[in-house]
Length: 253
Image (cartoon, rainbow, N blue to C red; front, side, top):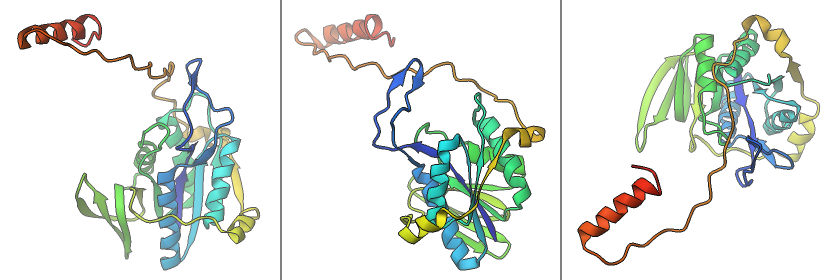
């Protein structure tokens, strides 16, 4: 069984987000593997241990994202692929590039995190599955291979739903699917010798897709102003004053 895991490098969840010049400043920040992608990778490793096969980690990102792929290799992935990014990338163009890069790998199963903690978005994996023409199961908290089918329990806001789809398929991992392992020292040493292939966007030009959206700018949340307390007056007078403040100062009415 060949399992492909989609990996993204993100800010450490403890990092302070600073917006400068309409962009998030990335200088000096600590970068990690997206936590939800770690659940996906751990599940891939467990399935390989049970059914045999290989695990390939794939990321679309700049050269520094090779660090995240090396972490995946240290955790136990067999090989890794880094797809070079494009300056105007959005979820649609990234998904097209990923689909084009992994199509020749003939994967039996794709795993990815439910969403990325830096943007809160979770559509790249699902768009990749659509481009590959395979079924997808999101927010999985249990995954099992049953012959030529995949059975998964999906988190559906306080309950679970069990679904079964044929493989190849894509699954996105929800928190609770497993407990990711830490890279061991032997694993870190072995990761240095495992293959990490770089795919340029020119190699994927035939399957490229133009970005469907563009990012104009990013603005930081404005500082919260001090609250106001309304004192005195009748309930009707207080309600009228509150309505005036919401209309004239807060401008929400």
